[in-house]
Image (cartoon, rainbow, N blue to C red):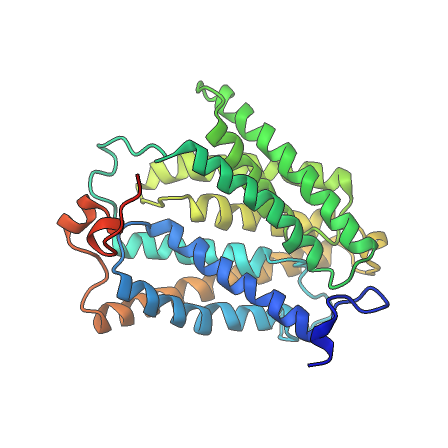
Length: 322
C-alpha cells in the first residue's frame, strides 16, 4: 500500500499497517519464550502444532484484550501494559511452566551437570536481546516522539540496575558473581520494565530493575529448586515471575505526568492485579488443553530417550554444531 512506503509519517507517527507488522514480532518472541522452558524434549511435529495453536488460541485473545480494544483496555481504569508485560511475558512464562510440568524433566536433570553449552553464544544472545529490547519498548510508542525516548531511557536503566542486582544476589547467596548471572539479571530487568516503559520515569525504572531482579533470582534459583520442575531457560522464573512483578510495580510507580493519565494508585494497582490474575488463569488452562490435544494428534509429546541423549540437532534434524 501507499502507507507501507514510509516507515514514519511526517508527524512522527508510524502508519497503522507498519505497526501491525511490528506487532507480529511480539507473537513470535512470545512463542520462543515458551519453548525455552522445555528445550530438547518436545517432538518437532508437536512443537509446530503447539506453536500454531498457542499463538491463535492463547496469545491472540490476550493481545486483543489488552491492546485491541478488549475488556482489559475498555474500562474506566485500563491495564497499563506498554510493551507486553501481560501479553508477552506473563502469558509466555506461565505457558512455559505448564509445558515443563506436562512434558517432564530432562534426562539426568538434578544429577548431571547442565551448564550453558557456550557462554560466548549466551552472552552474544543476551546482548542482542538487550539492544533489540529498545526496539520493542521504544517502538511500542508508535511514534518517534518523547514517549519513545523516555521508554528507551528507562529500558536501559532497568536492565543495567537489574544486571548488577542479580550479581549482588549471587554474592550474598554465597556464589561467585557470574557473567551468566549478569545476563539473566539484565533480561529480568528488561522484562520488568516492559509493561511500565511508557508510564514511568528514571527513578521508578531503577526501582523496577532492582526489585524485578531480586524476584526473578528467587524464582529461578529457589522456587524452581523447591518445587523441582525443569524450566530449562527459566522462562517462568525470569519472564513469568518477572512479568508479574513488573506489571504490579507499574500500578504502583506510574506517573500521570508522563503519559497524561488521570488514574489513582489504588484503582490502577487493583486493575493491574486483576488483569495479571486473568492472564495467568487463561494461559494456564488453555496451554494445558492445547498440550493434551497435541499429545493425542502427535501420539505423545516427548522424543524418545535415545534421541534426547544424542541431542535433537543430530537425531531429529541431522545437523551437528561444533
